[in-house]
Amino acid sequence: MTVTRDTLIDFIYDEARMLDEGNYTDWLNLWLPDGHYWMPLDYKQSDPINQTSLMYEDMFMLKLRVERLNGARTFSQKPKSRCHHVLQRPFVDEMEETRFVTTTFMHYVETRLDEQQLLAITARHDLALVDGALRIANKRVDIVNCDAAFRNIQLLP
Image 1 (cartoon, one colour):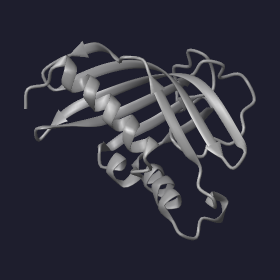
Image 2 (image 1 turned 90 degrees about the vertical axis):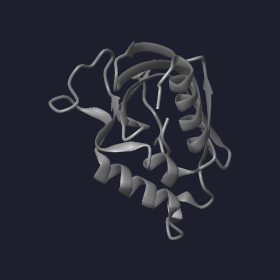
Image 3 (image 1 turned 180 degrees about the vertical axis):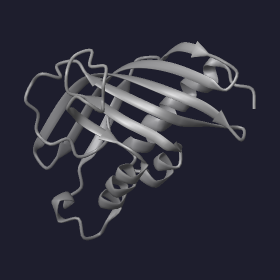
Image 4 (image 1 turned 60 degrees about the vertical axis):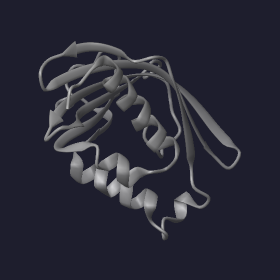
């Protein structure tokens, strides 16, 4: 597979669509086994291990989250939360032979019943080409007003 800028940009859009449509199992299959989903708590936070984060989930935790979201007995998700990503065109920051980095500015809306929250975020994807397919090695999601108080974020910005 030859990876172009358009290939990377399409990958980011496809990932957002999977989340918006609730295709969490397909989304999980985009990840490398040692990947991490990180949502820092502080502006320009540099350490997910020794500093508190809103989320820092490895594949075990991501699988648990997806099982909960797909589960029929998840009563806190009746009715289910829904989300919508509005993306600016992603920037391709790094392109190496098998490693790629993108940055995407977006608005993320999550809704359940009559409650809705809007988050302005910046997402950084570290992608890898493995066995001819792009995979997510790590994803960092920075909320612009990260120091504000938030309701529970149920889904995945």
